Each structure stands twice: as structure tokens, then as C-alpha cells.
Image (cartoon, rainbow, N blue to C red; front, top):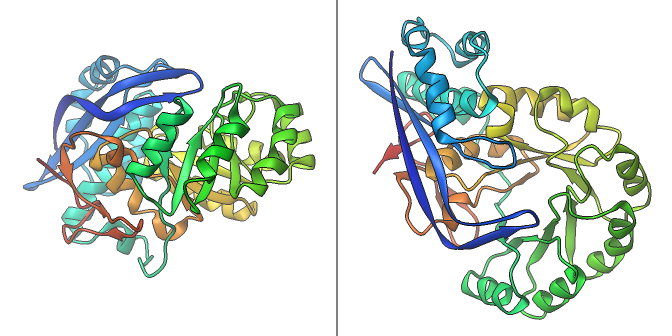
Length: 336
């Protein structure tokens, strides 16, 4: 098996702002794994919140390149065990695991969702994300991209006013992501106002380790609350169970499709609502997420839609949120 590594700088269509940062571009690592004439592709983005750089991930892989390339590849699950023994960071694991799953599907000549015994007869549509900006610019972004379902990033001193103004311009469903910027008291106070304005749920309103606050929020909030920063790896699923109504699984944070599928299984056992989110990946990462769609209640896979230029083909998201799955097997990815 041969490894290829390439860094890309993805230009964003608009400056993207959340409660803790703004950016105009997104660095990403694309990993290729080639075996028997087939190449699978995986992706992981840089992330300052988790102190992840592309150069750091590439250095990790280069340090164990020989052990990876010498591995006798059979299944993604067995390969993942091998990768874990090499003590790689979860983001690095994700890029390799996504590539391994794409390769496996291509070797088997089947899309991953079929290998996993699911169908695309029914699946949730993705939201489209509106980052924090002036109210006028947030309205303009919303009008530029008519969509049935929006995720609105909040964490300002005028959060409810923002939603009131946005509501004047669309009947679409809203989801709110405060990215840990609120207190328990703010969340409980804002929830009924936001519910009246057509908000479906709140994503990670409190700091990731504020379990006491989340216990109060879950008890008193009139809106469901979904964990994001509180749910990073597999062991977090059970920890989040008593404090949240659902979890948002990020492939880069948990280490890829292989652990994400286990998190989905555990979440179902605990009666949690299940969502998978993205990290402004290209179509490489988004196409991997799409393979999980039949297993999910919600999905945030608009990353490639936020880019000014993409680097790959794979799944196509239509203007009503529906997905066209590619004929190519695996995750259906081809680099441009």
C-alpha cells in the first residue's frame, strides 16, 4: 500500500466567524492510500481550537510511513487497530481511516453505505451554516442561499435579536450553535424565545466541561440540546447521555468513520438523537460523511458548500438539500 500526502488551502466563499474565531480560508490534508490500482482518499482539516496543523499531521504520518505501507490491508476496522497502535492523533487517524474506507469500497466495488447494509431511501438533509456577522450581512448570506434548514452561529450580545431579524426573511427551520459561548442561565432564558422563532434545537451552548450547567439546562430548557465540543471521542458518548438529548459526531475529532460508526451504535443504545457534523472539509470529507446519512437523525455536511473552490468530486448536494450519490464505489471520491 502506498501513501500520498498533499496540503490544500481551501478559499471560503465568505469570512466564516463563530464565537471564538474568524477565517477566510481553511487548510486541509488529503491522504491517498493506493492498493491494487485503486486509490482511496481521506481528509482532515487544521484546527486552532484543538491545536492541529497540517504540518503536524504530515509529520506524524511520515514518522510511521513504513509501518503503514507495509501493512497487509484487509478491512478498515483491522487497519484502524493497527493505526491506533502507532499513537497517532485523532485528526491524523481520521484522514487515514477515511482513505482506508474509501479504498475498501473501491476494492469491493460497492459504496460504503451498501457495505454497511443501509440504503439511501431515507436520510436527513443537511443544514446550511450562517456564521456570525453583522445582522445585515447575516441576512444577506441567508438571502444569497435560500435553503430549507439553516444552522445559525451565535455567541454575541444580540443573539435573540439576530434570530428575530433573520426570521423576517425566511420560513426555513433554524438550528442554533453557540459554540460554548453561553451560560446555563442564558440558555434557559433564550430557549423559549428561540423556540417561538422556529428554532429546532441548540448545539453546545455551554463550555465543554460545564456538566453542572448542562444538567440544569437539560432539566429546564424547552429546546433539545445537542453535544458537540463535549462529545469528541467514543467514551464521551456515554458521558454525554445524562446531560444532552443528542450528540454531534465529528469524524475529524473522533478519528474517522470506523469510530464514528461505533459512536452511532452506542448513541442509539442510549436513546440519543444522532448527528454528524463537518469541519469545513472539501467534498473528500463530505462524501465520507454522506455514507452515514441513512443512520442519522440530523446532519451538518455543508462544508464544501461554504468553499469558493472545491478540490474533488463525490456526493452532490442539490438546492433542496437532497443528495446525489456518485456511481463510483467507496465514498465516491475523485480528486480534481
